[in-house]
Image 1: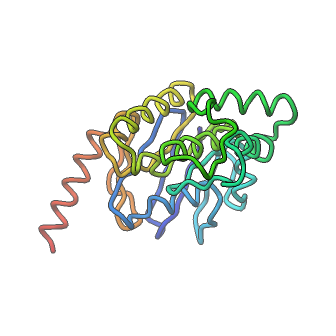
Image 2: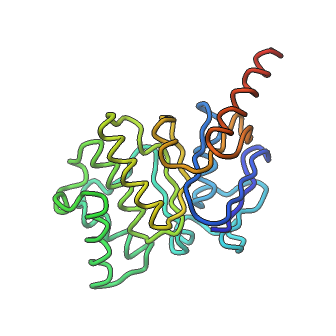
Length: 229
């Protein structure tokens, strides 16, 4: 998908070409969510450059990047609680996806089916359970028809069965050609989907590569730092 960034203490360099799924792991406070926030346009970096499909989008805000094909979920779901599930998607389809009329409705119906929310289309978003809110968060991001999907711990708080269902949904999106950047503390969930893993600590990338290689590199670095303490 041709996008790169330099952010978080100037020590985090990310670049990616093509599709697939990339995971970001690391301890609490490593800078993972900050990276996603910068890439989505919700936070402007003090230095560095963000490129999306070869274009400098560093000065573009989240709304502008959404219309360019960047979808993002949040660690804590942020639905419009007083609106129905369908109305939540319609906001994404019209404001972010720039769809109108019948095209917007068709897109929302398709996304409801993808995220297994069709039976809840007329339910108030504020009345949903955790898994349903997580699915709605994902559905709202998909309603902008993203080419890149930024996922921030959408597996947190779910049961094993719920996590398995989520893995299936995200894997389907990856296989459809949507590029995915996924932060997740539940490593075994992450490793079922991603083809590349970036490990961060203190705002810097400490390992990067195929999941099994990155995990090994990160473990070696942790062991070295512990020996120097």
